[in-house]
Length: 209
Image 1 (cartoon, rainbow, N blue to C red):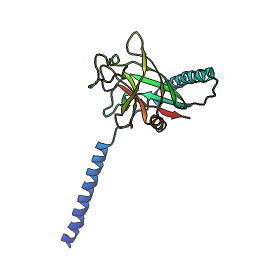
Image 2: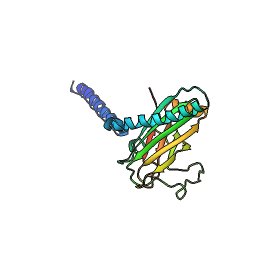
Image 3: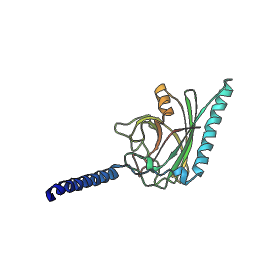
């Protein structure tokens, strides 16, 4: 009888141990929760809306000048170090981008603040092999949040005197593949600095209602 009872006890002990090991493994492998900077600093949301309005104004002016009607879709991105893949970057910097889409024409406006170092200079610190289309340290890439996607466009950058903040702009004619990616959350903005060459800030261009 005692031997009969020991078998279930041994089985239960093994089962409990297995469950503990599984829970420990899940906890270790689970990705860290990404901080939503917009929730921490609502001012960034207002800034994104302002940049959206700037982009919309550009589209309206373009379409009005050629006598065409216009409809546009809004997008916005909050750039943080938490979104850098595969390893998040600890930084006090932030970036905001607003965009407007009319047909296949995308206009982007934005800004960045409090970088840890100046933007990466691809003229003196190029990729290997070099890409002549990368003309600034801020880019639009196509890819999933958990991947480093292919370069699509460089944004024009205006840097403030301190070298650690500035403005962004870009105007692009998107391909059908890029349009599909944009509308499904597959385009993101990536900002590279000298201290964080692989990226200091990143954010997905998300559709806004």
